[in-house]
Length: 173
Image (cartoon, rainbow, N blue to C red):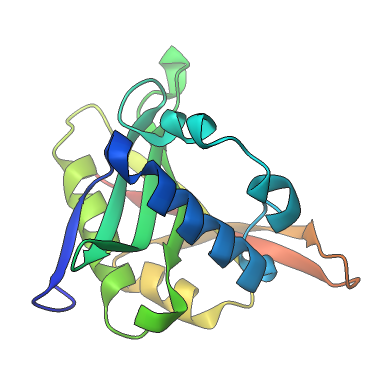
């Protein structure tokens, strides 16, 4: 684990306000890392995040907590269509700026992969990552994710930057 006082656990209903606060801060501070935009997402109703709790298309959202404070998150979604239910998708990986470089992203990712490997009907997981984000790409590659493509011009930022997204996958079995 990243630190003795960092806990990783599934998100629960009472965590939604803290999750939204972290997400809003990350979207505002790192627009190049997310396809969602801060302005639109900051106006979302808290109840809309209930879809990130376990159930429906979401397998789980994991939180990293430091003394009870939400400082990281990662969501795993699953395809609903029968022919592609063997595929899951990791979305919304985030670690608060105050806690970067402490292995928290790695701990969230390891927990998520272990949970997915425990589901016998899941065969692979995908994610997208901004192509220039070397730290994130390196983290994903270190646990076995492989790049299978790149979506050019995937994100267009208000300042005119156009960013590509790497498409990555990991075989679970």
